[in-house]
Length: 423
Ligand SMILES: NC(=O)c1ccc[n+]([C@@H]2O[C@H](COP(=O)([O-])OP(=O)(O)OC[C@H]3O[C@@H](n4cnc5c(N)ncnc54)[C@H](O)[C@@H]3O)[C@@H](O)[C@H]2O)c1
Image (cartoon, rainbow, N blue to C red; front, side):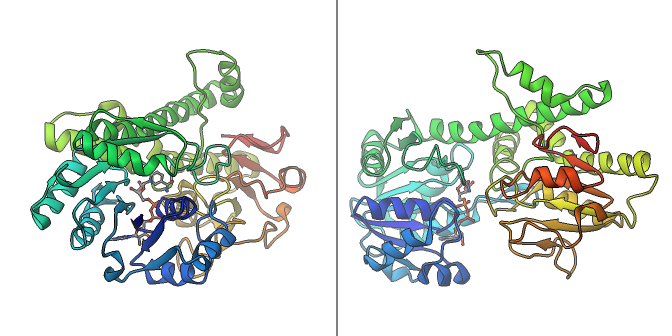
């Protein structure tokens, strides 16, 4: 079959490679010229896709990265994997609309169009299907098949990959759902059938909302535990020994990436604006998690005062990690970047070390991120404070523990020592 994957990002590129492996001819449609150049050179910017796999797909002639619309002609299945960000703190579906309009110009009788982007319930029916219907005059299930199948990819996770993570599939009609399921059953191991596209859309956005709320819960617990003089990490480890009815989530400097800070807003905003209904727990979780980077800065400030008798202004601070989680270079909406930015606002001189993120300026023109090195520009002991923000495997925690004057560990991974404080 000819598969068009709209958007070659963290979701679209692995999907395109899986479809190539399954024997399909794949057009990877990508408007970003820089990404396109890299793809054509066989250089992958997605950690889970090695350059070798990309090159083999290109050399085998089954994969064509392009932004030329003519390449989409006669596709059998189009999968939309474009961003669903926030704009002015509100859902921005303009990428989904634009990609659907592009697909609509090339759709043929019998084609299948699937939305994979995370969004609020109603988007597949009211946005994707209606653009396709307006453009073609077809009705879903008659000639054209439309569905939603959320992506659950977890960048850097070697246990749960695109291939073995259960894939929810849905369609606007039973025939649509069968066609969507038929496509995915050839490239993934487990298909889960949803009763409607809205069920599937809500399931996806709720998965991320569930994680967001639980992280907020442990972040708030962490603040309380600190006031009580109790170690929240040990407390959670103890609670985690309960073999039923408890799932362990961990505190940290906040939530980041393309999903957790964004997806719950799709749900809360939709609930409020369309139905006048508040999803209060989620809105509260957003407040707590958004305030977490400032809490980390406050804790550093307190320590500089009490341990070193100095202010943040002019302090030399080493931030370890900028990516939103370990093992990835993705620093979109990363709370680590917010911590660095807040520290710089207060006059601290911050060096950032991240073995995955390329040299980059968080604030101003001077690069503050030293990558892909794992050794800081100054000896660890020359910094007033080290703050561990992302627990990349590459960091030598033992050495840092021995050499640093003081470490604030926001991930709970450092060894126990007098110079180390956990969030
Ligand atoms: N990254 C994740 O871990 C993850 C996991 C599950 C779901 N999702 C969801 O999947 C969607 C995509 O996320 P991502 O991380 O792959 O984003 P991304 O930004 O890495 O990739 C999206 C790509 O789409 C391209 N694009 C923009 N407009 C386009 C258009 N009109 N036509 C074709 N391509 C276009 C962009 O240039 C970009 O390369 C989002 O809705 C996200 O919430 C992401």
